[in-house]
Length: 192
Image (cartoon, rainbow, N blue to C red; front, side, top):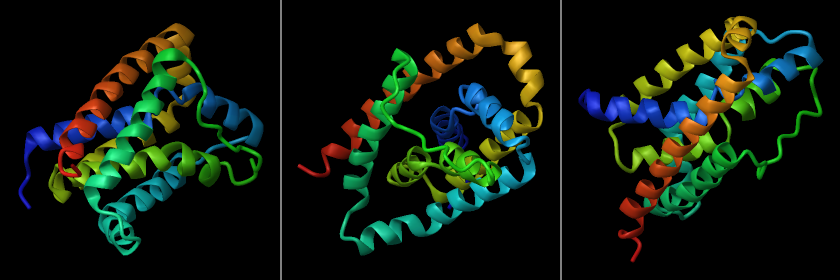
């Protein structure tokens, strides 16, 4: 387990694109308006705990269920592909259930908005290609960025404006689309 800056950068960018915390600013503002407050520290800590737990025991869980990492990575590439389509085309394929706003810091902010199916799928998919240490550091870097966005939510929304958020969402959607295609191509050959 050695630190590889290329793997670390790639892992960080994949997770940044999947978590899409900047693109989630409008959703976060809506949650904050409905619930009254979001606790940045608590939301970040819970999301990081979920993601790190999945990094260390997620592969064991899927192996226990009889699924190999390459199959999970291929399935994950489909999830990432559809998430990217949402971002690029501005459509909604995945429905978020935000019925309970009392515990908004944990649900829906920490889970599933930050540490959701896409994040967990990405972590397992990244495990098929990168060292665990690099992914762990990438998670920590992303959680630091998530904390900053949650802490300065109002300022960021005013600074970026609706147009800026839309542009960032589309740019990271295209990056995520390319990552999904690469992930599919590099793992499907192991299944044939």
